[in-house]
Image (cartoon, rainbow, N blue to C red; front, side):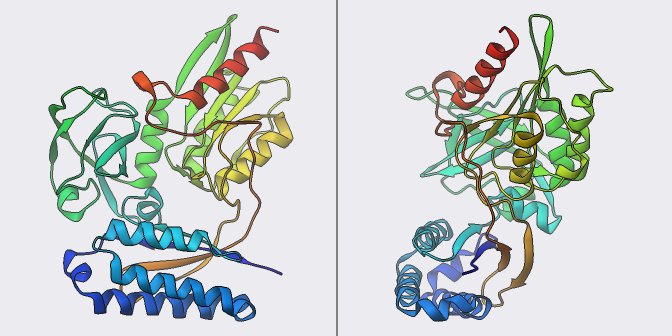
Amino acid sequence: MKYYSILLISSLLSSTLFAASLNKRDAIQELVQKLEAFDPNIKSHQDDWLKVRNHLEQAAQQSETAAGLKLSIQHILDQWGGLRFRILDRDDAQYWAMNGETLALPKAWFTLRGSKWLVQYSAHPKLRRGDSFSAKDFSPYSRESQSQKSWTLAVQHKLMVEPVPATFELNKMPMSEWALELTQQSSKVALVDNKRICIEKVWFSLDKVVAKNIASKIDKASGLCQALLIDLRDSFGEGQSFWPKVSKKMPVAVLTNRGTREGAVALVKSLKKDSAAKVFGETTDSDRAAQSKENLTRIDWTILIVGDGGQIIPDQEIRDSSLNAEGVDDITEAGLGWIRAEITK
């Protein structure tokens, strides 16, 4: 039986909508109708689907915020046996990549965890992975925050240490430009036994320009890299067709997590096949690209339908976390450790 996974992309909703239970209920009803129209397999699993519908309707009644409703729906849909769903909103990089809107950032990406925003990735000298600040009355991706020229935040660099106020100037670019600029800025080279290890972090959108930029460094003709570590955590998009065939003599380590999806997963598969790459981190999402989409009218969501594709299980499973002491990244360290061992054999 053929199933489909459906991605839901939403923007942050106004407090007015979440104060009105009728609006939330209407939105859920439209969502359910769309899903039932898209997937005929639901008809053959009516008992299970009715349970999902009931839980979705209860979530609409009980959720008081956009974040709360999103988390509730995601949990419910994760339990659905046939279909896989994911909700994306303005907090997700793919929202910005798909809509082509300009995005204001201080060269860092933030993820909501409870009552705090965590720095997920950063190319800013004052921010590093794992730093945090209060989420009260602030979202980096709200329309109000996006319209400002700078943010003043009380940043906590370590647990049990008082936050330090700092002002961050914002730059505005489309996600495609952010992805290229920050991928280039995140590029590093480490030397082991006089061999260069190229360390590359794809900032979310693996588009054609980003792929070409990284691929040019490992092409045989360039000779720039004798080993490669490429971080594809939370990456999506395309670009694998531009990748050169890498010799199996070149050690290649790939970092993945549950947010690695679509074209980024296809690239991992290609690297494993062509260069015997080793994968570190978490099992990926699907490798299939979006097939179609449709907007909802009662709530600012878009439904994307993608074929249910394959996943990559890492050679060494390591839980991805931004909360490591002193900014240590266990997945990166594992990948680099394997490359060093291969080089010094």
